Amino acid sequence: MRPGVERSVEGGAYDGGSELELLKLRAAECIDEAAERLGALSRAIWSQPELAYEEHHAHRVLTHFFEREPPAASWEVQPHYQLPTAFRAEWEPQEARAPSAAPRPLHLGFLCEYDALPGIGHACGHNLIAEVGAAAALGVKGALEGLPRPPPPVKVIVLGTPAEEDGGGKIDLIEAGAFTNLDVVFMAHPSQENAAYLPDMAEHDVTVKYYGKASHSAAYPWEGLNALDAAVLAYNNVSVFRQQMKPTWRVHGIIKNGGVKPNIIPSYSELIYYFRAPSMKELQVLTKKAEDCFRAAALASGCTVEIKSGGHDYYNVLPNKSLWKAYMENGRKLGIEFISEDTMLNGPSGSTDFGNVTFVVPGIHPYFHIGSNALNHTEQYTEAAGSQEAQFYTLRTAKALAMTALDVIFKPELLERIREDFKLKLQEEQFVNAVE
Image (cartoon, rainbow, N blue to C red; front, top):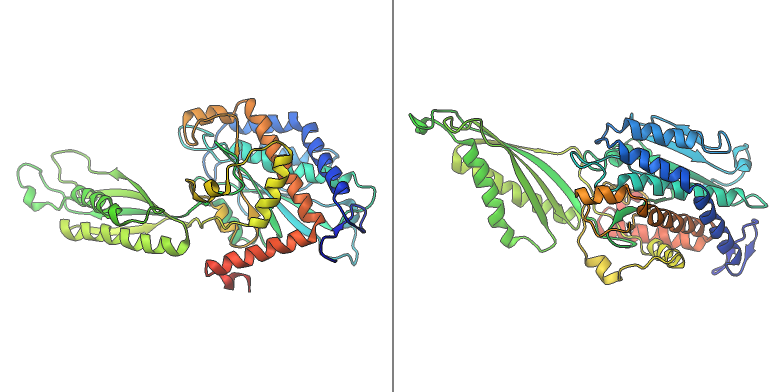
């Protein structure tokens, strides 16, 4: 296909985007038509928060949503997909379901998260993430169903991905092959601002255990080896090390166990630490330096130390400029006001297992304002995530994602640029072998 020419919604080719814009309008209308059902879905998840890998209620609500979505049986749902609380729902145009010699359909993935935080519920708004993923998928499906002729070969896939806050459910699903053959993936995360991309960092967590020797703290303390001293030394070693840390590095930890009684020399202590850096390469350097701090504390206190890594490292989210520019163009048409690119690339961020996804398939993970200035991981954000006000912003973001997905379907030159961006970023991260 020659440059600048898009696929027609009737299967041919045309110059200009008026037909595509009408299709995008239809996607937005489909989302509005489903607004009541989508809001009920979000509220059901929000009202019964569940922790990582235990999201049985949210999982049931989401799978029933797709199983019952009209027309009947339009979504093929695998309710326990690779993990007990994961799911996969697929839709493709009716014409594509019959065996034929048609080319392989484009596989577009929409991701839903739905785990909560201990003690404060949906303070990261994962109920809204689930709603955005479901709504965007419905919008694309509804737009394509309304075409007078068969659309280009495409399959819309919704993946329910548990355990983002703890454990890394998306990483489990990557290892199980759930992202194999997906071409582009979409999701969006609630925040305080609208950003097409934020540089979410690579993250590694460790549990540090010190083993000493108990003794009477007053009668013969010299007989003991104080594991709490080791923990305090470790904490202080890391604090002193902060002076030499790069400004983009983050280290935070707690002393989880420091003894049982003041008159007993603690024979055991335990710390938990998270390390974050802009890339996996830098994260390895940071982790090595921090672990040296832990080992030095063991040497100084006479204790032995055990350093145990968490189950999964979270990778940094790879940017895909072609994808985020398309998203911003569509978002602006809906009235979304985005922060500047400079602010976007240099602003504060956290970590997510979506980063690992971006190392295996091109994807976008924008952030969206929900009508509140409350900060994530606070009680105030929990309240905001369950508010009616958040619904307008959530569905507007879903529309922008659906519109961007339609661009990917009908603009093959955009898809090619997205794939090229993906390969270049992998090369920069020295993960080029992952795509060979």
